Length: 313
Image (cartoon, rainbow, N blue to C red; front, side):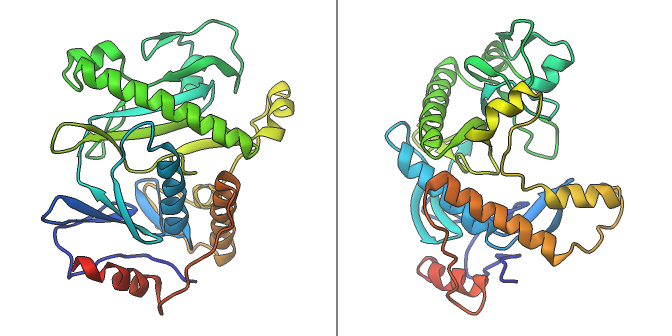
């Protein structure tokens, strides 16, 4: 299978390897961000999914270009389907999650906390009687602390964020305005594609002049939850989860066969990897309304990436 498992390019300076992305900081303040095809879960790399990095980079591109009238973003150029050249930012220590529905499975999701009896959370005051996956009266922001070094995200309120000096009041007001406007645009555009944008996370940073800039990715199937609109009403009335881009085949397969935090990972079948790749490709087409066309230039994906990045050597 044609995959990008590693993206180390020794001719580029200031290399930093993340779980999925590999980064290079250029002396002039630009950052090269290469999305590999690695699939991360359980605090480790499980396998590589063909076209995953391509899909995520180009889905984010679709949304960055569709929302650049709302707020500035870090993008400067796309020299390759897996690569974005961006402005290097100082990432703000608060992750902004916008939710339009009472949904989710993580410990910080509204649904999890609500089912545990929580009604006052994130500075919100939710009424009794809400049902699983019900639309909220209006989208809300549920900020969490950003765990930079393997720690766990923790729920925050606006008051905490300002009093603890994580953001200034002006910064909080700006990221809140940007996030809610981005989410509204996302929901409107998704609806035209027969999708519901349920919730999403945004990362913001500051540039050298202190301006707040949208970073990372936006409205991708990895950073956002989408439901298929036609599946929603019947699923909601039956107490079921609406249909979505279920790309967690590999995660579930591994969890059924071992303790993924302690044991060696069993060999993952090619058929499972390809099924996950197809979900990513389909997600791209459903979200953007465009046909997915893999770039098969070069003997390998890394050879293609290296060639396209030669002007930055």
